[in-house]
Length: 148
Figure 1 (cartoon, rainbow, N blue to C red):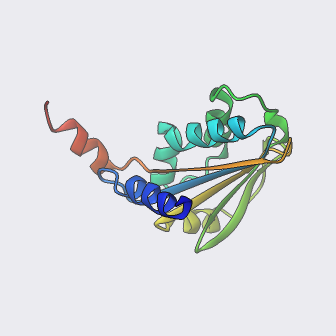
Figure 2 (figure 1 turned 90 degrees about the vertical axis):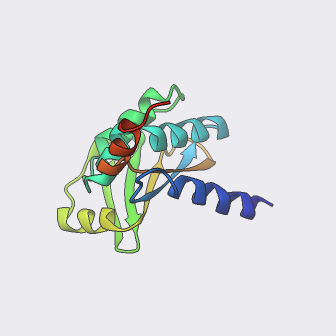
C-alpha cells in the first residue's frame, strides 16, 4: 500500500500546472520523524526553491532557509545538502555552509525532469521524503489568467 501511495503522490506532484520538474526532497539524520517531515515539506513547498529548480540554480541557501523557517528543531550548522538526478550528484553545502562545486554539473543535474535534494542533518536517525514540482513561467501564466 505504501508503494502505491508513493507512486500516486509523485504523479500528483509531477502533474502540477505548468510543471517541468518533479522535485523529491529527502531529509535524513533528523532528530525526529516529525522534524524530518516538516523540513521536507517546507523545502518542497518553498516558492524560492521551486523557482531555483526551474531556473537550474543550485541555490543551497534557499534550501537551508526553507528548512530553517519550517519551525523544526535542528542545527542548520550541521546540515549537508546534495543535488541529484540521472545526470549525477553534487554536494553544494557541508556543515551549513556552501561548497565550491562544478556549476556545469549542477546545471546538468537540475536540467533533468526528476530532481532529488538530499539534506543530511546529522542529528538523529529519522528520515522523511516529500514531493513537489517547480514553478515555471507556464505555472504563473496558467494561474494568473483565469478567474473563479
